[in-house]
Length: 168
Image (cartoon, rainbow, N blue to C red; front, top):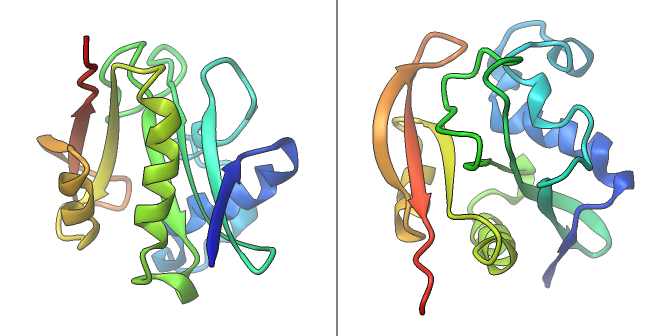
């Protein structure tokens, strides 16, 4: 059974691995994990993890980490970041290890993350390849497409926003 827990300091290396899969770096011929960690479009997702506002969950199966989802705010003054909405809207990053795709791990991660996040943020944004099957998952949990942009590898991605509706 898949379980989730909050991201801890020991998970930072795993978050980098998850950025590798989330950004489809495996499709970039010859790009290593070490090189990816220097990419200005990707470094902000993990570097300096643990700052105010960082929130994430890790999925585990049998004691092995198999996925992660996290929220992080970006500073447009220090990042050339096309998904940025505003100072208060963190970006969602999510990835599942390739051998666990299609088994509901992504849904489990998002459920666990938003159980916590919905109390502390007004909205979240993400970027996803426009033709990705994950678009349907994001729409199911309330994301709506804002616009499309050319991503770092030259293909089309959708920028999607999820607003939190709080009950009064």
